[in-house]
Image (cartoon, rainbow, N blue to C red; front, side, top):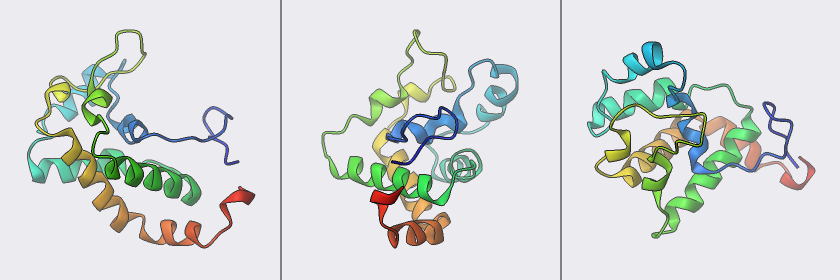
Length: 136
């Protein structure tokens, strides 16, 4: 089983893993102010946000593959609640920029992540798909 390098626990991603680059907890005055310049409902801003803060995060090709695959499976589920991923949980030590919990269509945001990941991570996804994942 693949291990998460940050936690040393088994790596079992969910679509929420894509939101880590947008976490402004304890960075409201730096990253938070930077992200507030963008509108996640605007297609051009959305693409820039995803490319700059989401897909550029350091991950191994295997982690990228599993994360991409996980998102694809979630997108195939018409009942998957992407809105729930954006809602603020006061019990968690994380938060997204103001207003993100009111995004017009969270599913579209994640569909755009999936589309751009297929392009940006193409080689990594292909490389990992050729391997026997049971050996990870």
